[in-house]
Image 1: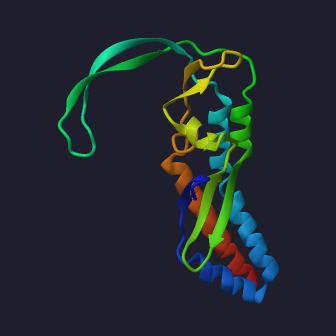
Image 2 (image 1 turned 45 degrees about the vertical axis):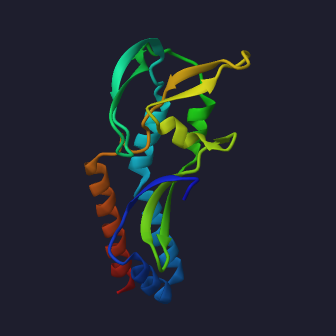
Length: 189
């Protein structure tokens, strides 16, 4: 899963449910998987809406003295670090990166022996070996400036994957999945 960013909503024993329905009616099992994917449409729409908004620009920067606490247990120390301030947000324009990330968002059903889930995933565009969907999810990243070799600029990222998804959306998705399973079993009777 190094190429994806995902979270899962796991119903109870999805594999057994799909196997039982497939044994009776394979077409109904395919329709049930399709309904599982459709159950995530609200969450996908929220993620795409977050990607449609432009992140703020970097307005300026200053150097500040910060206490650094190493994770490896070494002694804390003071160090100078650059701190960025948010600027205004530009209007208009097109971001191919944001549209490519939004185009890569998917919902898929996994019902293997080891794992059972309805999963949200994006593989996103790749640039120089980096998955740009992961890079854009970070708080801030640096990128080369077009037309100026060797010059780099900071840019705010945009938490599009987890932040716009609320607990209510997850609960509604879980309810849709449960309802689809109940409907599938009801149609078999």
